[in-house]
Amino acid sequence: MNARMVSGLVAGLIFGLGLIISGMADPAKVLNFLDVFGSWDPSLAFVMGAAVIVTSAGYRMAFMSPKPMFDDAFHVPLAKAVDMPLLGGAALFGLGWGLAGFCPGPALTSLALAADGTLVFVPAMVIGLWAARFTPKV
Image (cartoon, rainbow, N blue to C red; front, side):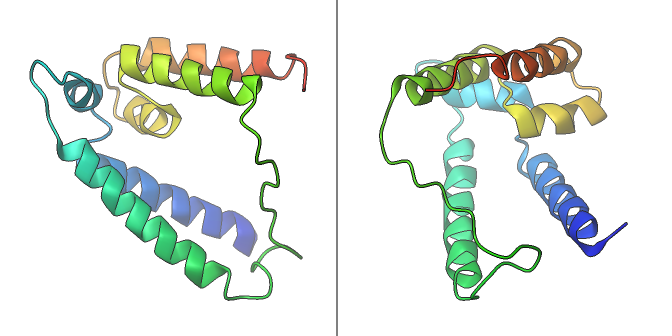
């Protein structure tokens, strides 16, 4: 196992641990955040805010280097247009998140915890990822 794989594994474990500690691996917590007129739980907003702060600091530190540790250059998306594939993907993501309370990271973490719904959500997600390979690129 090379250093790139080890760093990816460590990053994934830290991400998964953060999801478990924050309660974001529990779809009920996510669904309660979306239930503004019912049993609203604002804690997800604090988790998201903290994530934005940590990510911003991480990007600032990363871009101080001339290149990444395990590549020759940074690969930053150049597209700035808001197009139909972007809107459609965002809508599908939001729909799945709102209906199931899962997005991909927490779903995989919850699968390892044998949480309810993951045995349906994760295979559906994998099928969707596979099917997306065959959609026309714009």
